Image (cartoon, rainbow, N blue to C red; front, side, top):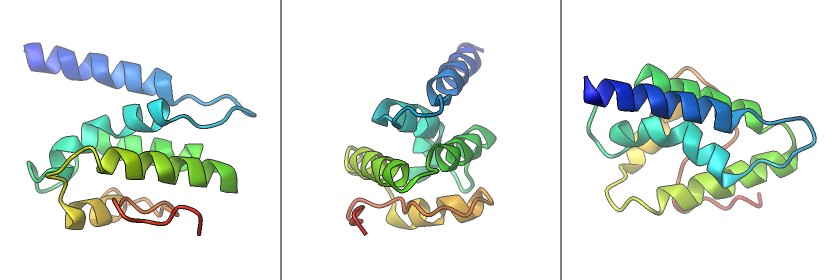
Length: 115
């Protein structure tokens, strides 16, 4: 029960953190909050991403509307990926597809976000 309450609180905080007002730049805090539910899947502790994870992936896609936003999201995702030594590259690359989201932002430690 304690873990369930914690997850609900995390989801609520992530929801409020990912709401981006028009004209405001995307922050890594927003991207990180959206993708926190994906860490278990990305580190090999699950065969499929959770619904909360996929909601976060969709939220990141929604944040990345302009070229500048896409570049910012890419750099944030790259920085976050590099924080986890046990991140599974195959899981990261398959995440958008497994969530049914077509993203222009790769989830990778080595992507060049300026392209």
